[in-house]
Each structure stands twice: as structure tokens, then as C-alpha cells.
Image (tube, rainbow, N blue to C red; front, side, top):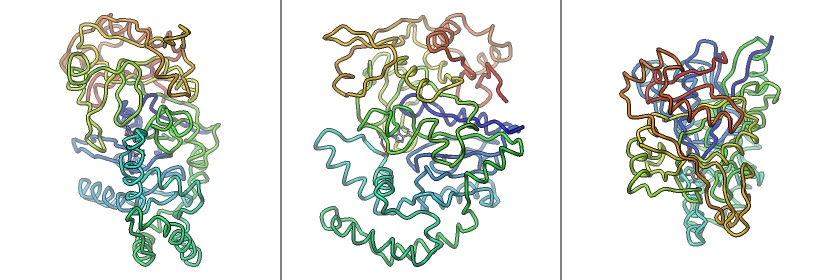
Length: 443
Ligand code: IMP
């Protein structure tokens, strides 16, 4: 029998607590390998294992659990960051586990000038009020080069003639921008760097689709770790305030070369409220400097993992969640940070949007047009809070099972399940792994 493919994606704007859910599954002995399929060093996962904290941006979480880990072709790879993270894992584990890492031949490289371009392009967009507030990791420019077919892929390092020719094309192409943008692109410097990385990482080069398929056929279960989130997807997200990769479940196939039939469990992470770093509209946004918004932001420690920016806050938006469920074909939900939301005496959930002029109600058809989105107002349902609890109290509740959850919290969870017609597999009740309650066990 083939193994299960479990995909974990975000349903909102990133920072839903995917890291914790990925960590929860990756740490299980029934998961044999972990695969990253999109994004680059713009992601941020904090994982605590054996009391040691790891801040990963690029490495799959499987590395922390010393499992074979794959970086797929859908990722854009920054070698400098990879080197830093491998060193950090090495220092913390006091051993070299780099042989566990496998990188797709087809992975596009982020080169130093992509980050300079990212800064420059954002400053131009700022003047047009269309800056997404990127992480400045060169993500957009690297994916643009890929789509424009002028980028360097990992495999290109292993064909010197091709590499030289590709760098010449890049040099000539960017010569038109260098004066204006002030980016530095020296063919010789790039070659020296790339030759070094080729030596360092040659043994990691692999055909990810082929290797992961083999594992499935051996009956192994594989975890696909999404980065960013549905509303940040290049096609389905809130354009142009999104990222440049395929962040949805289909990216776990296109971004790895693994057939979609293997993606048997598709889990969407839903934070009990909405948060957003960067620009763009957020339905029902709260003021995070006062009142409920401030309380949620402070209690939830809502600051960007990669950039440290304060996250904007809003109530849970079920229109967006239903949209994410449809696009991703979700089989289960992981609802996180309910402990934080519960401390408010009352909380709200957006159950629909009302178009202000026409009065039309939108339940799940997320608007593609920014002006249409902005012309809607949220329709809320109010819930009673379930109270602030200590970690020990939550642990006791977890021990006793779902039936011992506060009634108000069960009402909140069951309302989401009923509205979305998808069951919650996991409820996140706090920071540590033992505060993650598994409502439905899938492996
Ligand atoms: P980029 O991916 O750095 O180009 O940024 C594009 C948009 O996506 C910006 O609004 C970022 O704040 C947002 N973004 C990118 N990665 C993450 C993430 O991992 N969590 C939350 N937001 C992100």
C-alpha cells in the first residue's frame, strides 16, 4: 500500500501557526520525510525540539527531527541562508546532519542582487501605494527571473558551459538596470560564489519527484510543509499584496514533481483570529494599538517571525476560510491560538460580507477585485469567551478529552466545522507541543 501524503497549508495571511502543526506531525514516528514546496527564506518557522529552539526560514522542519528532508523545485533557494541554517542546526545538535537534506535539481537560486532589486522595486511600488511590505529576501525578483527564464537553477551549476552562458545572459539583461538601481552584479564574483556552493552542496542534488514517489511506494508517509498562505498565493491571493509562489495545496505537486494523487490529507491551518504583516486590505481590521486588537496582539505575541514587524489584527474571517477550503480541497482543519482568543469576554467571527451599495451578501466567493473587496463590510456573529486558563489547566483539559473543553469553546469550534463542512483535526491551545490537542487522528 502506498503511504499517505499530508499537506499542511495556511488558510489566511501566513503566521497561522503552521510551524507548530508541521512540527506536531513531523515529530511523529509515522512520518518518514518532510518536503518544502514553495517560497524561500521569507518563511519563518520556530520549532522547539528537546528543549532547543530552532528558527527556520528555508530548511524543512524534518531536519530538526533528523528525518530525510527535501527542498522542491517550487522553492527559491538562497545558498547564504541555507549555509547559515545548516550551521545553526549543526551547532545546536553538535553533529552534522546535512546528509539528510536533498535539493531538487530544478530549484531556482536567489542571487544576492535579487535582494537589492526587491528593496528597489518595493520603494517604487510604495510611491504607488502598492507595496506588499515584502520580507526583502529577493523572493519576487527570483520568481520573476524564473518566469522570465533567465534564472540559474541548482542543476545549472553542474554544467560549466551552460552556467557561464546563463550568467552572461543575466549580466547583459541586468546591465540595463544596474546604473538606475545600483545593483552589483559581477559575473566573476557570482561564479566564485556558485562554484563554492556547488562543491559544498553537490551531494544534495536530487530528483525530488522521483525520490519522493519511491518513498510513497515503499508505504512511507510524507509531510509537505507549506510556507506563506492561501491569501498570499500568487494566483488566488489578494493581488498585488501577495507573495510570488504557489502557496496552496496544488503547489505541493507542481513544486515537487510529486503526482497530486499522493496528496491524500490536506490540512488547512486556521488561526482563531486573523493577522497580517505587510500591506493590503484586511476585512474587519481592528486597531491593534487599543482595545480587543491590542489585547489579541499583545497576548498572542503577534510580531512577524522573519521581519519582527507588528502584525495587523482582525476577527476570524469565514468567507476567506471557505474560499481557502475550496481552493485547497481541505480534508481537515487545525485551529490555532484559541487560548488567546478565549481571554476576551466576547469575540466575533465574520460570517459574510455585505456589499455596501447593492446589499448583496457574499458567503464564500472571495472578491478578485480590490475595490469590490473594499466596498464590502463584514457581517459578524458574536461568541462568548471561554476564559483565560493556565498551561496546566489546558493540559488537564486535554488529558480529559474534548468533552471537557469549555462549552463556549466547543460552540466556537463546532460552529466553524458546521459552517465550513470540514472537521477540525487539531486544536492549538498554547505554545508548547503538549498543548496541541489532536481531535481526529489521521496517522
Ligand atoms: P515576499 O514574499 O517577501 O515577497 O512578501 C510578499 C508579501 O507576503 C508581504 O506582504 C509579506 O509580508 C508576506 N509574507 C511573505 N512571507 C510571509 C510569511 O511567511 N508569513 C506572513 N507573511 C509573509
